[in-house]
Image (cartoon, rainbow, N blue to C red; front, side, top):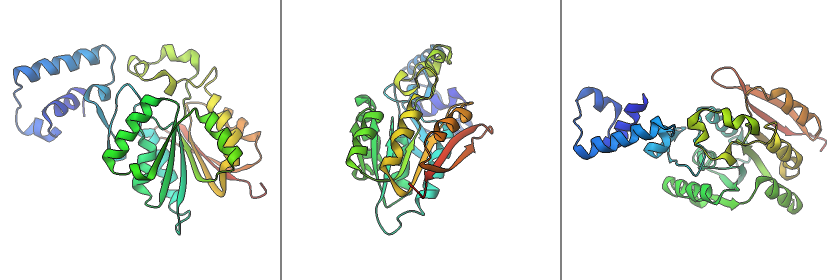
Length: 269
């Protein structure tokens, strides 16, 4: 839908087809609200924040300035993880670790698509976790998601010491180089900086994840990560430092850009 249509259907609580089938006359109050919406959009605020919701894999989620807006590309990440996850531990609990959960979109989608999954969702932002918990409760999966307020690097290091094992580690970490943040489109700059800033070269969180993930993955475990534009070669070099990973595979997004990387543990580890 076009942005005006998204705002109107939200304002009128109707479907797009309703706008086309029958002309909708706005009340004076609705006119005022619609003008405010358009003014906010003109100032660069994302339309998803304006209407307060978005769709992720057919799941309606509340979104606002507390967390990154889920992207369609991340659906590919989750679809691949779900496909692989359904084949794992079918006779028991599937332990999933979602690093940087944000709005909770990945954790919730994993819970809804894999009935035997138990998810641990980690985020450094207390505000994002509040939003994620609300979304999980609305979707009825909050009982299968444990939310942890912690920096992902700190959590991974601590969990490594505990020798806790996960069948899947999944993450869409911040991957924009710090110096590029100021050049992002206005609507993206309205999203939380902590959900975008991947350090000086955009690779900080990949280094941290790969450094510890193999120590907390089960022997048959899967690591699934979303990556930024043009980062494949750099990610491959980081993986090369850790022979514990094998079968490192890259998958493309809808515009044929390398967007997802998946790996398993070496059989000799």
